[in-house]
Image 1: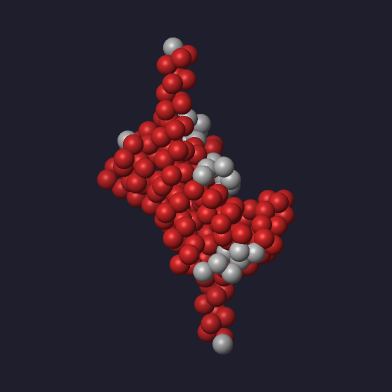
Image 2 (image 1 turned 180 degrees about the vertical axis):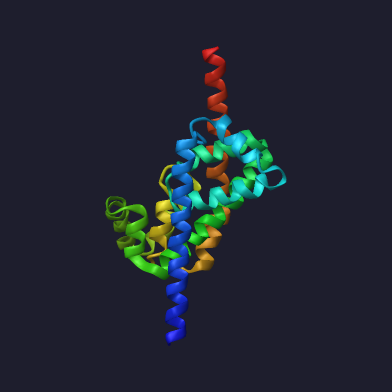
Amino acid sequence: MQRRKFINNLLKFSTWIGLGVFCLFIVYGYKAGLFSSTESFREFILRFGMWSGLIFVLIQIAQVIVPIIPGAVSCVAGIIIFGPWVGFLYNYIGICIGSILVFLLSKKYGKDFVKGIIGEKSYNKYIGWIDRGRKFDTMFALAIFFPVAPDDLLCYIAGLTKMKLEKFVAIILLGKPMSIALYSLGLTSIGQYLLEFIK
């Protein structure tokens, strides 16, 4: 019993340390201007050479767990940095892994942990979805498939339901490609069109 308690406390401590390190990186990034433009973020990522893809995937995983950077922004950055196909793949891998980790963290640490991450206001706004019973699974799947809802927040909420991990993973793996493609390719195309229009 003591050993299990120690392991649980260690895992919880490690989780908070990891979240803290990421928050420090975000603060550093803002001060250093890494997120001020796509070009500066691109230069930062490519600075890692052959490891740039891995670093980008890790950032995508982290931005799902701590939803500070808008997912749409990082998706577009992936396309611009690595091209449409490789960028889409990196976005997909990072976001799917991050979403699954969010679900597992929520399952393990419960509502107080979720409130601490997404904030009480967001928590209160979406926790009512749980009261819809089995309809939650359908609503969640639709929200993941179509980019019309805060997916990362809903992944935290899903972890507080009775949804099984296998079902959650299936929804994420099958539903994410469409929303990522719309975010990544759609917003990139709109941005390029606007640039051409301005010129």
